Picture (cartoon, rainbow, N blue to C red):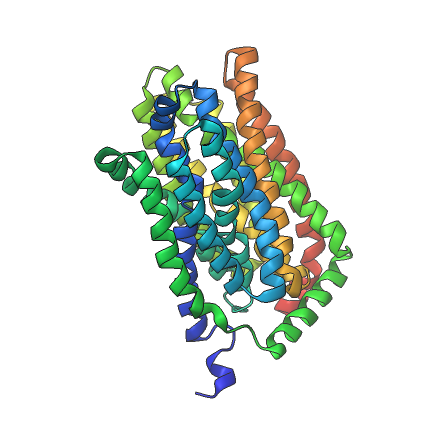
Length: 408
């Protein structure tokens, strides 16, 4: 096989790169899940209240959001190897410092400065890099790459729970840091090859033409996508953050709520993969609009059904619809915005979605405290979802002329 064809978009090498990307993302995204698992142990260790024990989670999400942007910019400039190496080293340092911390503030700062920032290397930069290696199957590749964060949520909590039970949370944190570095640093060498100049030039011409048909400047489209991402994740946060507490309030118990959350995340992986297939056929904007519409319908069902069996069904429906939404922003960015800026631009929108999740989780709790009911909180989520749907439907309608031309 000629050298150019061997490393062309959609080649066997590209699919191998996707598999390694998924592995790296599954390791790097441990930072978004480890705090949740060790929260009771940390609370007991430092003798704080539940709000204080939750501070490290807030810190890691802030670091994660900033890390997506900064690491994405570094990937655009120097290639993906540098962010992966930086992320591995920062995760190693952060988890070792967390394991050695003597106060809650030291533990929280380790997650803010090192763990969260290092985790940022395993999401937006990896998705942006992967998008350069696919053209015909870009949507499918992007959602597979983005599934690393969900796989981390399936694998790492089990390992951390075992580690805490057998060795304590301090040794477990040090072990996580050493394992992350041991896995990510060797794999970083695999990513040394960068897309060819011809591939990047063709992608630049394609995105410029699509953007011209859309009639929006890069800054305008970037802003719209960031606002849409924030709105959809405010709505998404209501069930994701509060389903356990909601089940407890209804008298079904925390364990039932945890089961529903696991079901939601598992079906979210199915949703992400399915949305990749769909987006490769109808485009990212149309797929995003479809996902937003179906997420809104699932939120509406929560208003009417609160029986145990019906909650399992509605939560499963919600998981099937919401999982594929966030990766579609990356697909749209690669369709319409300059490919050489994909890392930082995807990072900005992903950070907006993270901020939306944080705000949505907080405001839903605030509404519950105010009205002593989650019904108004579900209505609030539905309102934010409608705002998202309005934006993405407008983008979809503007994108339709080019899609019809491409089909012709």
